[in-house]
Amino acid sequence: MSLHFLWLSLQKRIGPVAIKKLLEHFSSPRDIYEADYEELIRVKGIGKTTAALLVKSRSLQEAAAVLERCQKHNIKILTCLDAGYPEALHKIPRAPALLYYSGTFPRSGGVVLVGSRKCSVYGKKVACEAASYLAERDVPVISGMAAGIDGYVHTACLKAGGYTMAFLGGGVDTVYPSEHWQLREEIASAGTLVSCFPPGTPAHPGRFPSRNFLMAAWADTLLLVEAGKQSGALLTANYGIALGKKVMAVPGSIYSRQSVGTNALLNRGVAAYCNPKQLTANELSLSGIEEKGSLLINAGAEQIIGDHKKEENLPKNASCDQGPGLLPGTSRKRSSVENKILQLLENSSLSMDQLALHFKNDRLSFLEALTMLEIDGLLERLPGGMISLAKS
Image 1 (cartoon, rainbow, N blue to C red):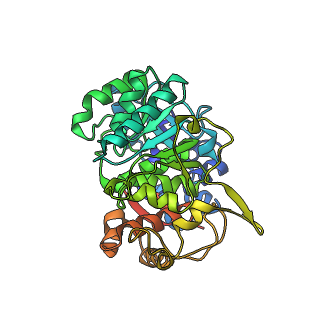
Image 2: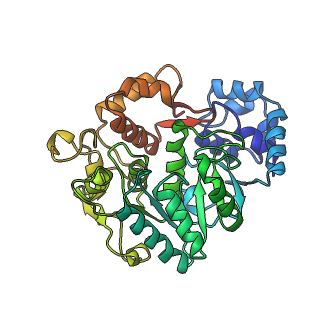
Image 3: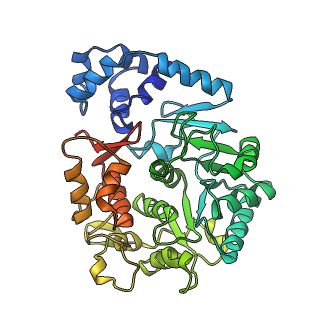
């Protein structure tokens, strides 16, 4: 493991997009560490502020401490320069440049199964059946080790002798929720624990969106089992749609709070999940991508940012202003929430909590808008939980 790469990944105000630009310009992380100010500002997309920060923070002390902790807890490191770094992540500029993992070497692809913490008996049965089916076919089963559906998914996969990956909202040497300490040990023994956060980092709600994005970016397919209207699992599905993944949702009772999110996605055009065979059927595509003019527009993705004034039958705060498409690189009309986020970040970086204070009554629209701005490459999540405008 390159100590210099670890140093680069730990810089508080430098995100994955900037790191990858630096790696493209210099021959090695060590060259970045040793570069002077004038060399750094010549890198496209690296401004004076970033260059000055890199020069000022030229110390390997923190990186050495993190590496020592990794060695003590048998935590390994995977970087975007390594052969095993997934091809799917290479295609996404804001995907983490460095990952920490414990257990077996991470396998690429797989199926994300996520849902509510307070799940129903129905949701539990669907999740366990799907996880067991995938395990028996040696398909990686991915979830977030949260209470509820996530925990049942990992457990069912392990019982069926399969391979499961848990993506965490804290360091891989931490446990959240605390009651999952035994499950964590079992996953570390037979599967893989993955995180973009250094060991010792406690789980925090502000870190879960990064965890959810990484899950969606890593997998081939996503299944939303159950989700309320303020659910992190729903955000994971939205990430998957925006990234062009195959996304499905389990139909649920119209009277169940835990099915509000899944039913809303179905109403927007996402494929309905009815059989485990759908999870491995190559011919099934994400919600039926269809061509309209010169743009490829996903029927489900289009509705995620559809004008909620025209969707009165959907849950409140379930969408943003209408735009022509969500696929990365396409142009679209910005929602009022997105514009407000950009304005708030105009002069300085802010934490997730600081931004959320401005959207207390519209939490889901805020998270969806944040998702789209990140997918479009306009925002960066920086180490330390800060969010800033992406450097052009």
